[in-house]
Length: 93
Image (tube, rainbow, N blue to C red; front, side, top):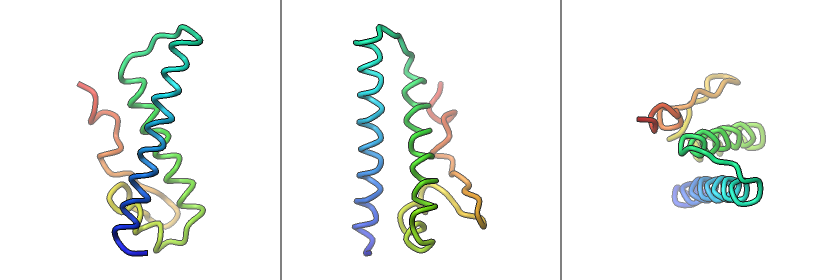
């Protein structure tokens, strides 16, 4: 794949997880009358992204995985090390 397809794939992953997270909180609020704080949304979104990265790590070959996620994580053997952008503390004030 070329670079633009790799970027499009990652954008689609991020967008789909974001939409899923927003709908989850919307439904929990409207249907189950639960209240949340903004950090709950951030934590859920980042957790879902990390889960997706792990799934793609196991699903894709190493070259394809690196092309997709090199801006978000580093692979050290069979260990994924997430870069700072995926740390929730970055978004909490």
